[in-house]
Amino acid sequence: MSRKFVPIVVFLALSFGLSWLFALPLWLSDGLASPFFLVVAIAVMATPAIAALVVVFFVEKHPAKGARRRALGLGSVRPVGRFIGYLGLAMFVPPALILAALLVGTAFGLYPADFVNFSGFQETIDAQLEAVGQATLPIPIGLLVALQFVNVLIGSIINIIPALGEELGWRGWLLPKLLPLGLVPALLISGVIWGLWHAPLILLGYNYGNVPGWLALAAMVGMTTVIGAVFSWLRIRSESVWPAALAHGSFNAAAGFSLVFVMAGESFDPLQATILGWSGWLVPLGLVIALFATGQFRVPVTESASVTDAE
Image 1 (cartoon, rainbow, N blue to C red):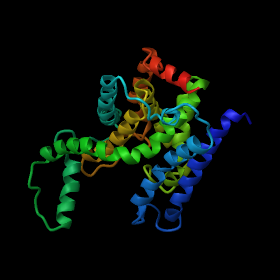
Image 2: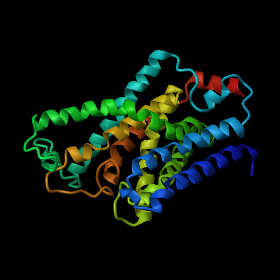
Image 3: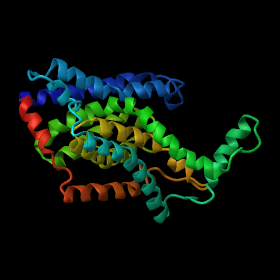
Image 4: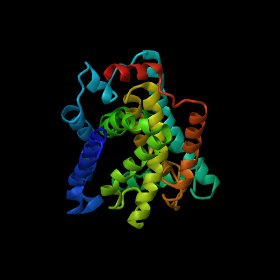
């Protein structure tokens, strides 16, 4: 094995090994129904960052000042204006893609939407109120739906820390290591790796429910490859891992939109609809193709210069 691949092998072994190790309590107990699921899920999210830090500090050699920070995507954020602009895109693009996925699913007849009366959301809220002995919702359902968008903005900020646990590894450290293979191979390989890394939870039924494990994992790989390319664009163009981490946090915060706009009494197949299913990948795939065609994946001059300096 070429020495230049040793850090990547170590990184992958640690990321995947620790994710299975941290998820083991779920496999040995109640699975997704475990009261410790949230704690375990957050711990699993931290494994790529742990792996990247181990590799950067103990496997790679970084003699240049600040090289470790640059290797993790934590270098300079200048020019500040451009950096803030990409943070803004990171905040709003993922929720927009999730909403677009619902529209596409509705157009194909795969997602039973109620964008007017929000009947499914109303049904869920009524059930929750009944469970606590409250008869009616004190505010109009439309206002509550509007507040969900505020929650996404707040959730994006809150989620950035656990999301950084993944992004520090995937887009912060791994993506630049794969870019010498070419942009398209780097996007595909990193997306597939990101998807397969989710196996400990996906095989328990997370996201896709009771479907064959191989099919659920294949769908997850499809989603992570397409969405990962969007996150990679933010990483490359901003020269920083922070916009990718914020985009990941925003994506997670907006994931519940599929339950807000569904029609009462109806269900949908996540393999087919929402951002998790094939119909939901069409808009982000179109965005990635458009970005590629217009040269938006080009590494900025300052990034190239920093890499040269680090060497």
